Each structure stands twice: as structure tokens, then as C-alpha cells.
Image 1 (cartoon, rainbow, N blue to C red):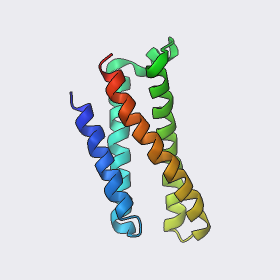
Image 2 (image 1 turned 90 degrees about the vertical axis):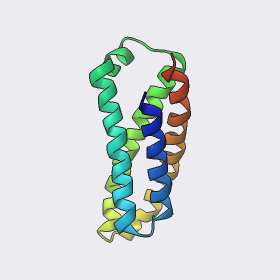
Image 3 (image 1 turned 45 degrees about the vertical axis):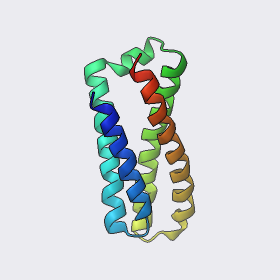
Length: 122
């Protein structure tokens, strides 16, 4: 399936975006592209596999953990977009917050990436 490729592509976008974090003209489009691809994967899963319904009906174990981490990652994307916009508008006091959330996000996205390979075969 195409998901492992897309997920790997997102990690590459995030890594390159991190390298160019001091260059907003590159950083912002890279990070928004990563968000767009991830959001597209989430929407595909929902519309083609009824992911939310499966979660509500009671998945357990590693799949439940993966879903929780995935949800957290999507929320953190939105927080990063919000705080990144504040930085772009010149509100420097947001920098520490953005950096801290980004670190948590990267750990979460890596956990999401690894667990996806285990739950994808289930």
C-alpha cells in the first residue's frame, strides 16, 4: 500500500523543514505540506475504513495506542500552525512554546510512524 511511502515522505518533509527552521520561506511550506499529506491519510482512513467508528466500537492494545498518538499528532500540528503563525507575525515570545511543542510533536510523529507498521499488518 502507499501509506508507508507517504508516511516516510512526511518524515522527510519534517526533517528538511526542521533543517530550514530559520528560513520561513522554506520552513512554512515544508511543514504545511507535511500536515496536508498527514491530514489526507487520516481522511482517507476515515472515509475508506470508517476509522472513527472502529475506535468508538472499542479497539484495544497497540491499535488503540496508535490511534491516541495519531490524534495527539494532529492536534499538535494545529497548535504548531497557530504558534508558528504568531512567530511569523513577529510575536517572538511564542518561540519557546513553539519549540517545546515541536519537540513533543516530533517524538509523537516518530511513535506514530513506528506503530503504523505494526498495526498496518493487523
